Image (cartoon, rainbow, N blue to C red):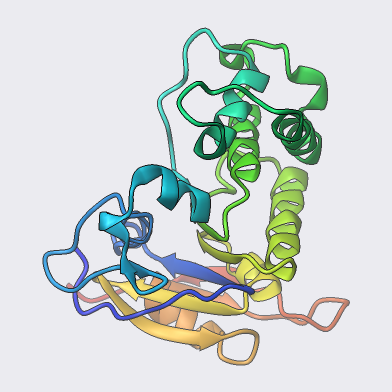
Length: 245
């Protein structure tokens, strides 16, 4: 449950959300995506209540990648990725040449160009996760809201996805993502929100505000922050912080 949360996401920035299990991270991104209604207050997009926006209009501006999604049955990878163009194709769902090009580009960007004709169900979990990301790429939203997008990906694909998010930020998008890797937060985020007990306890600028002490207080772990070869910190977990009961 969230309580007394007042935060905002701007275009041209990446904001990471870190917190222990049950801290409210998924609830927060679902509110941002307009999938749940707060008991008090409001979530707005361009000064309009996000819950009042027509779904198609909202989908043109905001892309949501859930932590998990039911598997679409009997569709190819390409057909699944092409669903990201639905906000632009109208009720008939006919893809224009520009839509087809967007699908091609998205598949290539996540490394699935050769798998477009495969049944989605035959892909590995990590490949299905990349297909979901490609579907959101096709949507081309101004704002991205992602719940643990790195989950299930191998290290190389995690890095590639994070680089893609940075490229989207550089092109003017606003990105909000839940992650569990402080090192990725330090390297790729502009700000980090630390959540505990349903509250945003810290809104930190990166890199200076993100410290091992702040992470330890929030995540219940002891962190070291050795300097990497490029001068950045690594945030290595070195122990658990025992809390009194």
